[in-house]
Length: 414
Ligand code: BGC
Image (tube, rainbow, N blue to C red; front, side, top):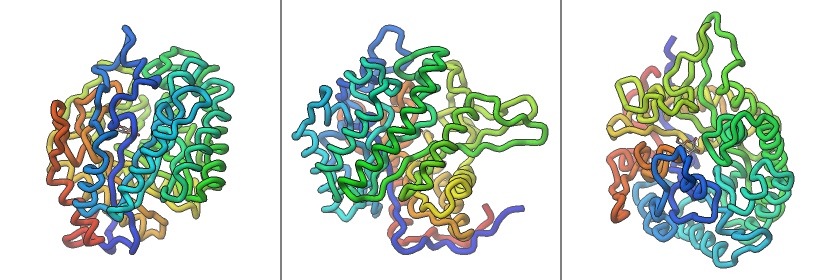
């Protein structure tokens, strides 16, 4: 039965914006595990990140551009390897840089949401074992403490770790991300245990120093089971199970970040969705009527399922949608995707779920990890030679929704 959306208006104070991460946009993050990974001979990366979007130097214009669209919130990351370039050495200049990025947000009336860890670690930490290293939680805590001390209440919301559920399996079992281990189950388990501990300690440090609402951002594809499906067997589900441990911690957090791009369906024979096997380098990545450039099923309704799962798992904890988006060559398709996804947000609000933001991924076409620059998620295209920004119609459209605080048009079934 299609559900009817009762209202098209978002609550006062709702946060409308876009997200990026440090590594995928700043450029020149040479002191990280990912830079190393892009340059080893056996790299699975299609191209190196290089200068990325040169956001490191262009943040002023990018924040002004985002505000000019009408958006009121910006999620960006700080790069640990810049802030702590060698173990225990903190860079005042880099912390001052990130203070300036935050100041640019405030000058434009934009609410800044800051991610402390988005997939990358400093190279010196990678050399001692990365996320699986015994000292990782303590080192993360110290980095959070020093960074929060320097950036303070300029931050509006802090995200400790982005999508921790996949870091253990992708880096230690599947070998598709650094450090590139295969079938190292002990390593994966250590990574997961460390990430849980790091979130706990990092969040406490950030709250203690900066006093700002802090949480974790989780990847929550909408997992759907058909009759006869045997839940719990695929690597995708095992990853997703890690989220349950993070949900436990998130019950004590100030918010929970929800991130979703598609659904994955399971039948008696296992997964039946395109793009569900990330370890398969030959998987179909081309865009079609049913799939996006990532090879995922086009299914913007997934956001509703993800929000409801977070709500069920952490009742009463405010939800921020910190990432939702589509990689597509067709910008009208992007607008249609966002429109449907935002109607899901409205449906969840109508059910009484406390959803406080919708942040589109991504503001810019950026470095999509091993897939390089081919997938285009951006509200804004970036010229790879000149770094010139070319806003798409979807940016203007989302900005209008933000200014109106409402989706226009008659209520429709979703
Ligand atoms: C990650 C981003 C990534 C996006 C699109 C999310 O899982 O946080 O870094 O670019 O998905 O694939």
